[in-house]
Length: 164
Image 1 (tube, one colour):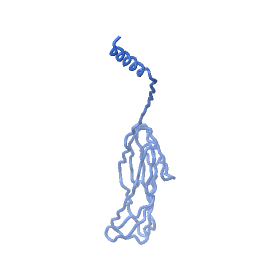
Image 2 (cartoon, helix red, strand yellow; image 1 turned 45 degrees about the horizontal axis):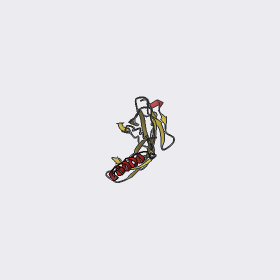
Image 3 (tube, one colour; image 1 turned 120 degrees about the vertical axis):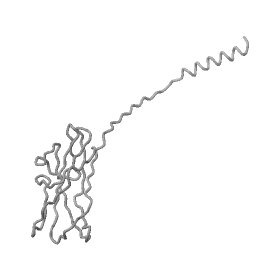
Image 4 (cartoon, helix red, strand yellow; image 1 turned 60 degrees about the horizontal axis):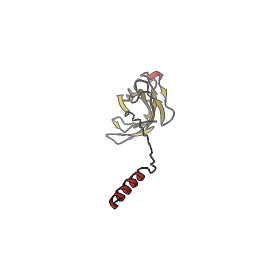
């Protein structure tokens, strides 16, 4: 036998030995559940209505007052979400810069029924969107009228929503 036949035979044997080495394989399964974004839609702003002379405080109940603001949340059906919000906001008179301290109250319901809504007692509050992916919130407030200068007041009431 020629030397070249030995070399070819060794190469074939060597490559078949290399192919028989133990192999290890890892299987990794990754899954993700991507949820829809939660949309916050303002249905109506707070309407303080008429302030009577001598009235010291104005209260707009989120459960019983038609002047409460209304927000509609839309997202993934039957999902649990967390709602956090501004409890106190200092509003500023646009003409005089006089401050006005607003104390906010929220109530909510999976149905558009203000009188059946439940007052939020924690902040943040955990709620569940209904089977259509909707949840309603009513925004009420309380503020002092003592020494209040008539005019337009501006400030930011913030609501943040996240899936749990």
